[in-house]
Image 1 (tube, one colour):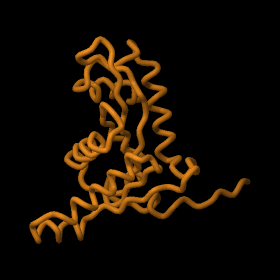
Image 2: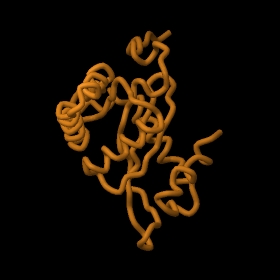
Image 3: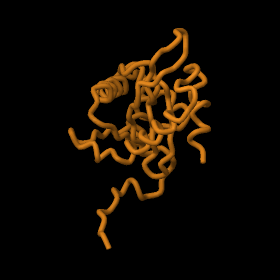
Image 4: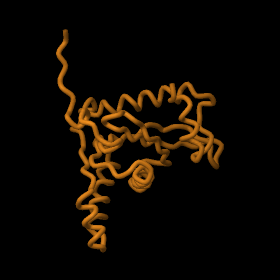
Length: 170
């Protein structure tokens, strides 16, 4: 019998959904919006304990678009305690902007809230993609479902999350 390494503690301790979240991008994917054919990227938010998915569509990989996707995620799923990402420049820039934003908030009450409930951002080691395997595998599953979808592009940015659900459900 093969002995396996123990899972990290934050992946096996019961917690609320998306308390510990892994984030990565997939794509580009073809969409139909204003142009006959356009491209966008998938921001995939993965819960570490339940492996639940939250998918947002972003038009490009800029920090501003990612922060908007993160804002939509937090509005829908709640504020995560810890975020794990790879070392993409988008994630490093977003981390710096969030730290700067939280430091410059004027209200003392708001500052206290973010000090107590702030997000801990952890980056996996450079050139060690297997450390993010618990969210990278789900990206592969989403891509596999998208390849099977007919037609091979999503209709609009607004319809995308609804169009993605049927292939992912058992």
